[in-house]
Amino acid sequence: MSQSLSIAVIGPGAIGGTVAAWLSRNAAIDDLILCARSPLDRLSVETPNGGRIEATPRVLTSPDQVEAAADWVLIATKTYDVEGAAAWLKPLMGPHSRLAVLQNGVEHVERFTPYVAPDRILPVIVDLPAEREGPGQIRHRRDGTLTVPDSETGRAFAALFQDESLKPVLTDDFLTAAWTKLALNCAGAVCALTGRPSGVVHEPGMAELMRAMAAECVVVGQALGADLPDDLPDWVVERTFASQPDSVNSLLGDRLAGRPMEWDARNAVIPRLGAPHGIAAPLNQMAATLLAALEAR
Image (cartoon, rainbow, N blue to C red):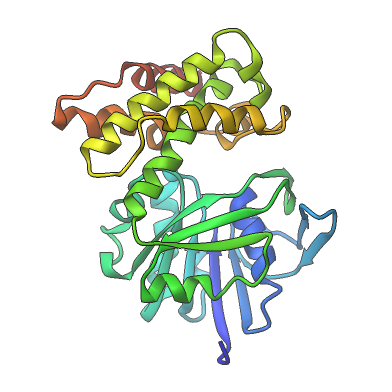
């Protein structure tokens, strides 16, 4: 990557802020822009190896402040804020700009096709345990990955990252990778519903509930063509047991902070996409219904 690049990150929360901080270490990026709702002085990210990244990207708080299109636009907002993120796309997306969607769920491309041609959208699966501790203050707990399709655009995206702590992964079966992550995410609703971090899996009945929710996801994903093993729910539970007991997933973090929650992209999507195939997912439907009621309150 010899030529200089401009990159805009929409949504400097836990994920967007961490990604932007690691991008700030790439010397080929000469203009790193954060698109935020509020002014931000700097990014300070505690890294998994005990170090800290201090970055001072250019911060814009309104699409009207954009002066030129970016080479890459990375969307790291929550899935319920598509309209807010899309407001930045008109000034940031030029004829040769590429859009990477770093969000949960399995509908990355579908969410933004009303605004950008699908062949210019790169879906990204984020596995990045990071928590926002204050404006621009983020704790990156362990090494993370960004999984993208093994395509020319995917390889160009992967080349932006140069550190093992946030590693790009190329896959020739993105559908399966996305549904695998969804199986993990849907079970994480148990944390938001109980108001407790990952350690809640040790309580009686919690592992079985998570396993059953993931099993519903597997059946729907298989019907849609994802190559998911039947024992994937066991992996979901094992991974949850292996996580730090005080780890707070983004769904729980949003509930504790009184913010909207991604119950549609993480749970309601499963019965919604299963319905045309005659597949019910009552546990995920119940989780989505309860989370929506908690959000409304």
